[in-house]
Length: 146
Image 1 (cartoon, rainbow, N blue to C red):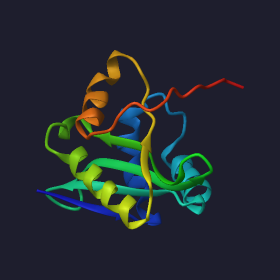
Image 2 (cartoon, rainbow, N blue to C red):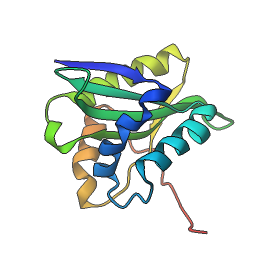
Image 3 (spheres, rainbow, N blue to C red):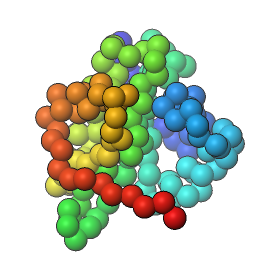
Image 4 (cartoon, one colour):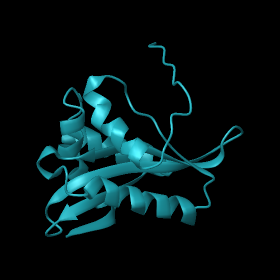
C-alpha cells in the first residue's frame, strides 16, 4: 500500500536520493539541491509529491511539477521529473503518482499535461510507460548549449 502526498518545503531533502538515482551526474550536494528547489523553484510555483511505501519513512517515488501559462498552450501542467527508485519499481508507484498529477492538473484548470523525456535505449521503459498513460509524442524539443 502506498501513500501519496505533497512534500512541504521542510521535506525537500527527501527527494535527493531518488533524484541521484535518476541523475547520478548531478553536481549538487543535498544542501545545494534543497536550497535551489526551495529558494529558486518553489517561489515560481514548483511543487513536489512523493509516493511512500509501507510507512511515511520509505519514499519510493517522487514527482516535481508546476503549472505554466503560455500563448501556445494556454494554462498547462508540466511534469519536470518523475522517478521511481530502482528498489521499488514495478509496484505501481509511478502510475499512482500520475493519477494524482492528472487529478491536480484538472483541479488547477489546466488544458494540457506536458512532460519532456530524454531519448535513447535507456529511456524505452519510461517512454512505454508514458504511452501506456495515453500520452502522445507532440513535438521535438531542441536544445543549444550556451
